Image 1 (spheres, helix red, strand yellow):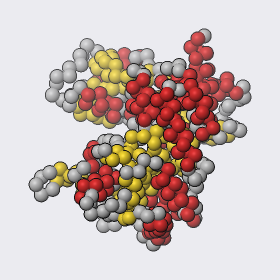
Image 2: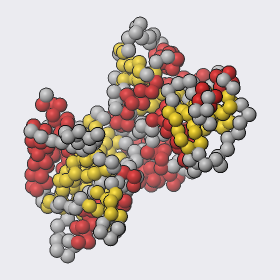
Image 3: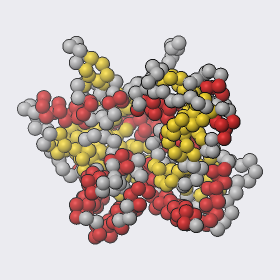
Image 4: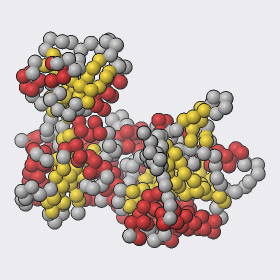
Length: 208
Length: 285
């Protein structure tokens, strides 16, 4: 029996669809329930940012989570497979017409993703003040709270609508199948079995 | 503000029942080790050489001595125990089998109690691995023994340009499987001793030789609950060949392996007393 942590919303739905394709059964959470028990798997519905935490502490053996969240949290888990879904970019956005100038003595950056931002600028030896925000990040440069933002960009529409544009990509993200390190060792046959089945579905999709 | 009853995050406090349990673990371990001819040693908390055993130096709690030389609190016992015995006690003792019961400290304020064993000049890991099995049996703790070999990731990095040692730290299995080598894929899937011969038959000789060592260690082990994990790479700097971990759910109860200090090959392990205490306490409840 494997416990699977899924992030609420689109990713959970898509992942359960993969399980339906593999096993030919219906995998659906009852209304507002957070646990779905099936003969071979127990699915947990958790917040996106909590998936890796559940897996790291072995409350779940495997999970599905965005690479951006994994990189931001830096938890030691096994990255089994790129599911090639939920593809987006983590990018630097600035007011339209402004250019990224890394020679400035200090930059102010607003972001939800403090660690990714810190690492990016540290690698370029640029001193930054990072302002942690929890939402409406696009607002920060418009009202002078920050020189730029680091945020997730899917289509770029939200930035455009707020008079911002992408000046630099930091990383490309997609959803990953992850596993707890000890679960991977102790339940390797089960973990690799589901890894193989999901990989085959993804490969078929990409052929089509 | 620091409250009067506050203790630093990550530090350990045992009292009453839990202290008794900790003492019980240490007593069982020391009796078994004593009966097997091991001498006890207690080494200094302060050390000049910790950077040689800890992969990430930021984990060290660093301070300075009276001449402003950098030193740190002991974050790992092995290197210091071996160095002290070899360099300091070398002429005064012929004893090769040592154990210690002492904590290690990592930045910022983490303490971890350990029971450790070093068998100097010994190449066979089963000699000490079976001691952990014996200690756990006496404590009525059932764990899964994971057997790995640090040489295998190192050889694979030499064989495949696309692979780096970090791929093994993160267990990037998709990368290994995408190399589309049948024996490498079988190596990723290898879990039980019955599967080893099949992989050895098709793997390059250098890999097959290392697999044989894992198989032999498995056969010499006095416990039947073992799995093989050939793609596992340990974080410790000094383990260079056979390696084992004793795991239960998400906890590591013990780990050990073969290592070299200068020219001398030795084997050793450490039991993580705090994790064991917690498990035994839960069981009692």
